[in-house]
Length: 392
RNA sequence: GGGGGGAUACCCGAGCGGUCAAAGGGGACGGGCUGUAAACCCGUUGGCUCAGCCUUCGCAGGUUCGAAUCCUGCUCCCACCA
Image (tube, protein in one colour):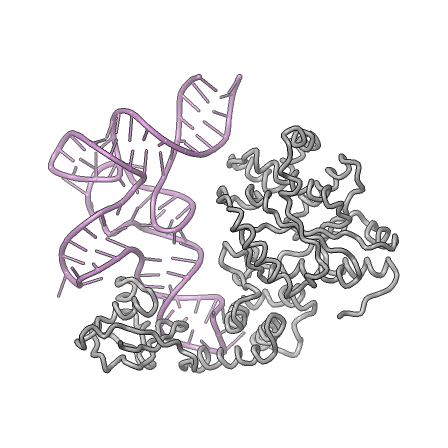
């Protein structure tokens, strides 16, 4: 554990050191000075349960609060999840069944355990209080004006672009704010994209006669494309439970100029000055695999990478796949590729024509192959897909 | 309630009677190169028994030798005025 300062002001400075906002000014230090465990809230959406590196930035901050003896409150948005945070213009979200939400919440809790001490986390679902009477909803809806809501960037942009905004989406920030009321949050964390919602939570708490929460935002981690926010739906994420080789390889795929941010947000340091981009990236990749797996896995992942992508050799753990021998006659290679990798005939033909299919490292151009030419051999598609054929 | 705009391949988006399996971009994939699964360059991107055939342009009909393109009726979506 990191060494942490004793007095409130220094603690507040420590907690806010890598935050974007910590509002209002000075309030965190004041409240820390009360000498009681603060209730620190984070809301999560159970639609996409897998935790990726982007989540770990804010989770790490929660962990710091936890280590200082404060109470972390994780809110599973089983109700708000049905609405969908309006950020971005994602389409209406599918309504999740109770079982799906349960499963997702469990997954999230388990994965969050890679960063948080889950034994000391209070997990709540916002259906506990959001499944309210219409009359209570009226009360909540009265707290905020449409003009206030339209100030939010997402809404303002969509409004300006004449894109649709549903009333339900407008309600989302209110519901999130009410979560803060329900759990009596002292602090709410979120990425900078959450700033509006977090601040509105303060207004709503005030309306309900509560002290306003402190708002603490963390920077948004870009995805492996180095441009857009890391998110599972954009497919530019690295999940904390992904296999070591994936975490390692994907990390090496980030653009060089994303290195300083990744180091800063994930390791809390700058890229080593004495290393070039490649080696700095490798060091980062090792550190991440070590964090979510262990050091041995990190070295194994690096060895795997060197073997497959640098030396262009076949990995040693190629899965063996049964392929129907089909009576012993010549095999139609596209059909074999369908069995091995689930490719369509057309895809397979294209890949063969482009020289992307190799048998034991040698490109192959024929569509029909003798059984002996593939049985027991490794077929490779592109750089990353391998399978050993076993005729049955 | 009123007049208007729209629904095209993974996404965005052109096309507005034949030369359309459908421009362009993004993404993805393959190849080259390389310090990387980076950047850059080239290529591919509906399916199949693949020099040919089959099915696609919201849905259902119709006009035509021929329709993504024209007509009719549905369905859904959007912004606007009230």
